[in-house]
Image 1 (cartoon, rainbow, N blue to C red):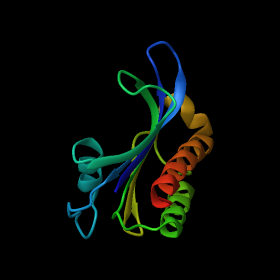
Image 2 (spheres, one colour):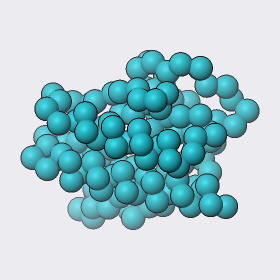
Image 3 (cartoon, one colour):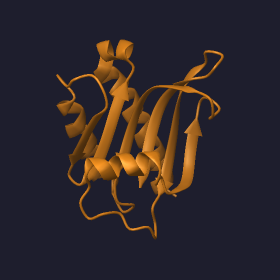
Image 4 (cartoon, helix red, strand yellow):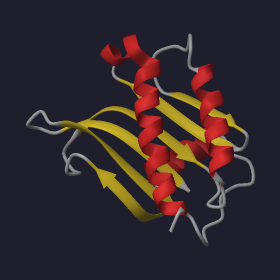
Amino acid sequence: MYLTAQKVESPNGIIGINSFYHSHKGIPLPKTLSTREIISVAESNTGTLIKDKCDVKPGGNKVKSYLDVVALDSIDEKSLVSALTKFQNELKGKEIGPIIEIIDKIGFCFTAELPLYDNLDDEFTLLKKRALSLFRLVKDK
């Protein structure tokens, strides 16, 4: 599974959150994740798009912040929420730039534009809520 939530800004200045849920059903993911696999999934091996929720029409937007999640398709909500909470707690004091972590066999990547770092926890919470909302929509089918 590849789940992402992105704060984007359209060319005409509209800001919103776009989120996408991809499945890797039938495509084996490695039993253990590495930074390389997390980046590979997010950039080129996203899987099959199952559902999206977009405030801003995709395409040509500037990404202001994003949260990527890479896990097995069988991940349950409790495990995902627990790992997201641990990841959020580890963000405090991190250097600026993409923050990539593997927690409880779930891969995360989070970053934001420099001006958003003043309220990094709020930015993460915003993206986390949207990602979890889309996750629930997919899993509650």
